[in-house]
Amino acid sequence: RKEQKIRQREQKEAAKADLTESQWRFDVDVCPRCGIRFLTKGGFSRHYEAGCRKYETHQIREERRVERSVLQRLAVTDALAIETNLYRKRDLAFVKVNFKAPSNKAVLIGIELDEERDGEQGNGCTFIVSAVSGLALDTARVKKGYFLVRVGDGSMPLTKRVLSRHLCADESLEVTFLRPPPPIPLHGSARQMIHKQPRFVMNKAQEEWLKTYAYDHSTGRDLLRPIVAFDSMKAYFRDQLRKDTKTPMWLERDVISKWITEQKKVEKQKRRQNSRADSAETKKKKTRNAPGNAISKQGAKGGSKRKRGGK
Image (tube, rainbow, N blue to C red):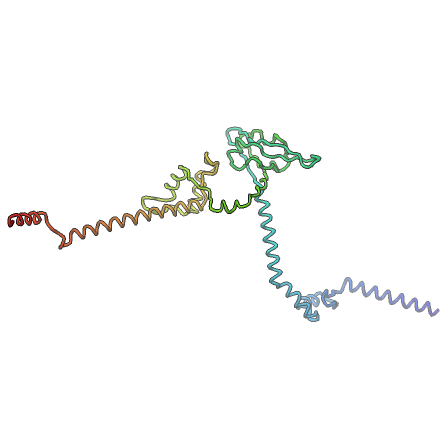
């Protein structure tokens, strides 16, 4: 009988504990920091926003120190910069070319591909550019040795003859290529090539445009700023390419600025030379017209006659 009473008492206590736990679980807010239970939402929010005064101070200081740690911030910044640079290098390897045919005729794309098997089993294949002509040659952005990555939106299957077809009038096609890795330079090549720079030779049409719209040699003043001249030149030539180098006819902003600076320098040297010549002539005239050096021709002849007569 005693055992039965003890068992009943234990069951009542267990049921009461379950009831209180269920009430705490659904109706009571517990602070995750100090473990204090709150019956109202407002009391818990005020307690939590105030910083939980019963929370250990050294832990609060440690958390704040970690949040304000300069070393960790610098480490995160460096990691982000490294990741950004890696993405930039990866994007530099890809070349996206948009081939567009004129509105009045069809044009040959002009890219021939070679197929290479991947691995020993040869399950996959890679397409490499072997020859460039036609519209691809005019764009001057596709070179021999590039890897074909994607044609269009990726739904078009990659085949050996996918880029050797004709584009219909006013049709466009976007193709993505992958540049091959650059060759490893030989030892000492950096020291040999450090002073060598490619010489830029300006085209006749480019120079005429700059003389007409960018700089006025008659007045010795620039007509347009380099950034404005760059935009105007790009809008004027548009998609025109040079026949010798296959590069765009419009020049970069730095090249235009350098050309204007050189023209100003040349004009300044001319003005200096002219001013020096004018100053030299004025000095000669002053010395000739000075009262001590001014001798008339008649006086010089008369003096010679007197000398002869005296003799």
